[in-house]
Length: 119
Image (tube, rainbow, N blue to C red; front, side, top):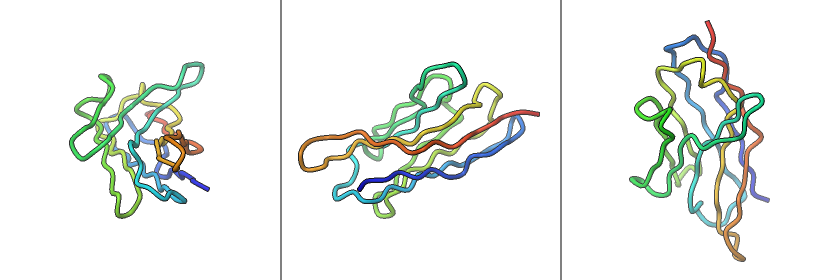
């Protein structure tokens, strides 16, 4: 059974930094893509960043230059380094992985981790 478990969320003041980590387990193949999404109260879940290979990354305009996504296939992890955080970054952050299961690509999600940016 494939599982994604996030860690690293918390409360931070504006201008601060947090690092989120997602541990993937139970997969037979390395993920085709991994990413982070976020959902603020009353809003839809939106892409923050995703990565397909070491250089094939995509970021939402709102986090470009502040967030960095990275993956380590040897450890089966995907991290999100978040710098210069602003209150608008407050949301539940979800890890996502698209993984080949032998019968096609399937979407997997973590349970989410809360990030609160407030003074």
